[in-house]
Image (cartoon, rainbow, N blue to C red; front, top):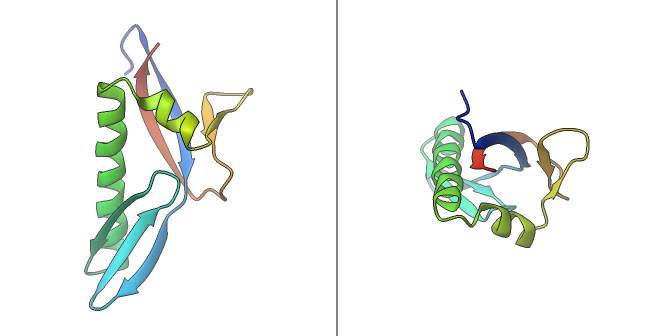
Length: 98
C-alpha cells in the first residue's frame, strides 16, 4: 500500500551474469550495481537485494530522480514506468515521494 504523498513507479533494468572462477557475478549496467553468488540464482537474488538497497537509499537521500535522469531513464507517457535505452529484462517497483 502506498502512503499519501507517495507514488509507486517501475523501472526496467538489465541483468548480466557471468562466471568468475567458482562464483557467478551479476551486474545491472543501468545502475552500475553488482553482486555475486555460488549459483546463477543466488547471484541474481543477491543483485536484486543490492538494487533494492541502492534504490531505497537514493529515495531516502532525495536523489532518486536526479540519478535516474543522469543515467538516461525516461518516464513513459502512458503509465508510471521509467524506461532505459538498454534492452530491459527486469522490473523494479520503487515508492517515491511526490
